[in-house]
Image (cartoon, rainbow, N blue to C red; front, side, top):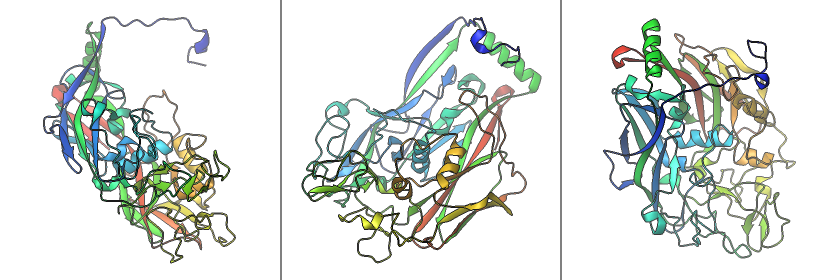
Length: 488
């Protein structure tokens, strides 16, 4: 029921806004040429007038890969190291250096964002690339020839600025805005010794090949804009600014902390609204060159038959669905057993699974008799109130992200080995069309110390890095004369 007491399905009414016009502009970076090497950076300057739609505006580009067996990881955002947004020279949004792709992978795996199925490169390609070319052992998955020589085939969003409220921002109220994009280095690529072309024969998709490198081609910002001819909206904004002294824009701002995991990891943060904590664990040698990492539950073809196939296959030759991820996107439960190292040395195998054996990834084996528990502590308060077992992490992660289930995770094996995410909410839940609300934990003035604590006899304290993301809400206050103030 609404305030009037009448449900929306029974209401008659019509809102009319006259003089609306739309347009889209292609903005070329003033600091980038036609090709930007990995690790490079470039900047876009936004228009100074008009209503910009930050949600639908995208950065599009082409991709060039070099090296035998070079392959892209899942999601085109994995190629981005950092996005920095400035207004009048003041930094208002800045992702953590080196961890932009990690955070966006988490956002995808928890259903918070969903890149375009066509232009977002949502899968690791085995036998065919995105435009239909066959991939073999010595082929690089590259898009700088043919149609890709003149057309930008891939895109990314504007990061957390795409979630700004309100969605349409009057750029005439703000000082000159710029978006700086920093590209990731070559370690975000996989290098496969062979493709999955001959499934009935030896398959070395998880074995490392030669060195790989990449570059971005023709980066452009596609800015989608609106304008209102009546002037009523501009007058309303001026009136609101005269009454309150400022207008407020709110958007999420995520801070990342990464350190070696020795059983616990500690960091501090002061935030106006701390909304959520999210932790993932990666093997320490994730940045070394390697082949693909298989998603457990799908077929990993070795010799004449696939192994680990839970979905779409019966173990016979040439059967089963094979899916992979890049090493830096593998979020593992930090366990001692099962040890994914065929040699049995006790060292986690960072190159994926090279052997045909399945015992190394059997999370249900009888040898695992001790748990892995995780828990946060904020100052002296424990959240949750009990150490979370490995089977309970998924429920809290779904709660923290407002979902019923992880959208692309089919088994515990896949969750533990490929997509283990531990999250806990600290704010009120929200619906899709709710207005921005500040309801998270306030740590302003206290610089709260937060610890990720691990326990249990199966906890691995030597082979993993712990990465924790603290999701906060920032407010940008815009005053007269294009003055701005950032509250975070």
